[in-house]
Amino acid sequence: RTSICILGLETSCDETGIAVYDSERGLLADALHSQVAMHQAYGGVVPELASRDHIARTLPLVEQTLVRAGCGLADIDAVAYTRGPGLAGALLVGAGLAAALAMAVDKPLIGIHHLEGHLLSPLLSDPALKFPFVALLVSGGHTMLLDVAALGNYRLLGETVDDAAGEAFDKSAKLLGLGYPGGPELARMAAFGHAEAFSLPRPKLHSGDLDFSFAGLKTAVLTRVNQLGANVCEQSRADLAAATQEAITDVLVKKAMDAMQRTGRRVLVVAGGVGANRRLREKLDASCASAGVRVHYPALQWCTDNGPMIAYAACRRIEAGLARPRRSYAFDIKPR
Ligand code: KG4
Ligand code: ZN
Image 1 (cartoon, rainbow, N blue to C red):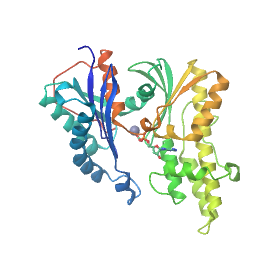
Image 2 (tube, rainbow, N blue to C red):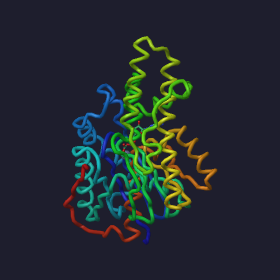
Image 3 (cartoon, helix red, strand yellow):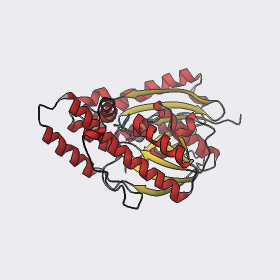
């Protein structure tokens, strides 16, 4: 058999994602458990609760995913897990279980960088997509532009100097009284608002580099919220949500297009949770169309954290000879 079948575990933050990916047959099965409801009461992720929940979920989800994939553990060629970045305790759960499973069937163990998972996720739904490309990686913890020459060959073009784009969405949403995680909720509310009603800053828009900054925007939103006071009407909140979304996406689009121009690449790939934002997609579609750039997005379910992206990244690494099949079960994590 020449195909490679990977079991992948993602437990870096607040989702338990498990997948079985086959190099020839594609994604055979996957399962996802989101802890959002559990953390909601605290307004953010509580690391200790996240770890405990991963412990309760991982093994049953692995069993369920294998059954759905129609294979047993013995059919798996390697076990992949998210090595980092992420919450240390949460990462250890995935790493520990992955090592145990690999050892049980004497198969190699492969640690995957979480961001490489996100970076390659558009290839999961679009196998025709080829290197090289520029990637706009926009998640809750990261905002970066990367020049992706080939698998494993990534050059950082620019990144945020303070908050990530997802953080800007989440923190602004919190100021607007929305629940956690605020990004999708803010986007939903923004659909009913008029962005022109408020003028908000676009930090670093014309800085000439490819770095981002979102801390100032959050402060500006706080100022507007305080000005509006406690009796703010629904329409004003929606307007402010729309203005915030417009400011964040304006900066993301401008910098992404600058990166295309600088690198001369013709393909832009968007990854990470904020890549699910409809307004961002609308604006990128328009800018890319006029610049003659092809833009790819992961399927919506592969934008946020998931198991398939980890299994897939491991599969590509093994195929490319970048991950030597090694039967060493000394696992490690890299939270930062
Ligand atoms: O990639 P991801 O699932 O986790 C990290 O690795 O960080 O990204 C989560 C982030 C959160 O900040 C969330 O609010 C944001 O992605 N997000 C969105 C949308 N969906 C998720 N932000 C704006 N609009 C959305 N539709
Ligand atoms: Zn992520």
